[in-house]
Image 1 (cartoon, rainbow, N blue to C red):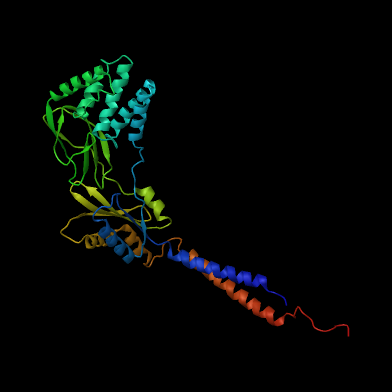
Image 2 (cartoon, helix red, strand yellow):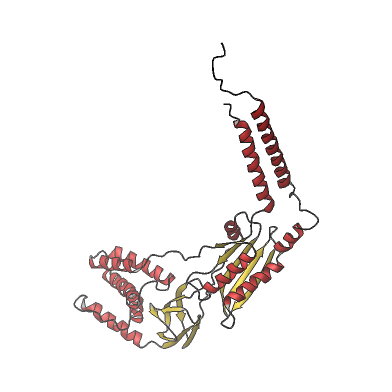
Length: 371
């Protein structure tokens, strides 16, 4: 039997073109991107639920933006242990190199993972190494700093020479005579504050001079460094920066081919949490809105209302309304032309198949034609 493969192939291609044309006529759907900072913010569950509900009402697909994260940092405790091991092995140069690196890293990271005793060890062992290299007087500041960080340290005379024990006692006496100050760190109420490697829930009594400080709070990028206390009542306001939602380029990358992008973001502000919405049209025009999230109103309802309000005023909605008007938008005619042509190809293919099927002889002949 003769197979009409070309006819069937033409029909399949035509149907595929028709389906593709109809998909092109409707255009890609809008994309709603939800974002929140790391750390599981308290209003996040209700805020996301309100955003998703409003986005689905607008016919948008919902995408969760990846969470930002601070760069991974290696702990300093193993490096300190290695420096102390070098000192015990009388590898003084190697120990000093590690301790200098610890000094740099701990200051940049506000003490990092080290507690007060470990921070004190950095400068105590650096003084030891420099003393054993014949530079004890030049390293005196290191010994004083070690005593300031851990004034309760008791030097074991069985492990260190008598001159080292006497020097540390003299440094501790100097520290005891230093003026004291009350350090108050101006940070959000839920912030985790560490001063010289120890948690500080309120005003902290410290000596005058340099101190390690690290502050972290949900919604803000962590901040760390060294502060110089110079007054009896010292107030320090760390320059905390709120995590920011995806910018235009990142949002477009998440949205793919969508011609409308709605970004909803939970953002930390000085007065608490805010929900911010941006509705971006295909031509780049943006409608924005923000609302403070308080305990006085249901977060889900407040967020849903904000999304609906911004969407109502969005240029994307205006463009969509214009598309349905009397004047069809440019370049919208091609899907229907392709669809009509595809339909015509289908009709021709089917008709040709019928004609050939009824008039063509069979490809298989029974019997002996020579008889």
